[in-house]
View 1 (cartoon, one colour):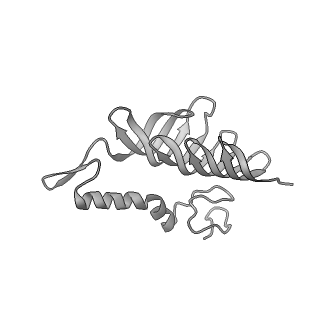
View 2 (view 1 turned 90 degrees about the horizontal axis):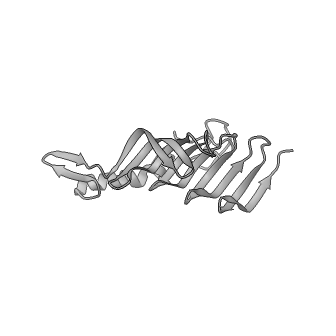
Length: 181
């Protein structure tokens, strides 16, 4: 498959271009890969009448407040600072709305103010595939685990140098540095 932004050849199942970081949202494969289990879950819960958040009331299917729903704008205390979040949330009766599945968090204050996380969440944690753009222009495209870089490509905006590989405690671990000359 070809990246619609830079035109370079990328893997068919890519969610983000490994060269320019562009989100590949127009890919049918990306949509089903990233949403497939949720689509299947929704269909199963509707058809079987079971599952968290759904119940039948007469001829109507009702969505309870502790289920996954889309929020356009949510003020949220992100693990790395306050943020404005748009995406799917899980309504927890104890904690309120928690980012879950996929969304975009724009950090509004703190050390990382101006940074944007666009990707997957798991119960309020940055976990899964994402593109993270720091306020200084640096970009990480890859996978997060427990709110930290796990594996992927970190590009330094000022020089064009990048590290590709795995990360330990959010720092480059095993992989290669590539330097622009």
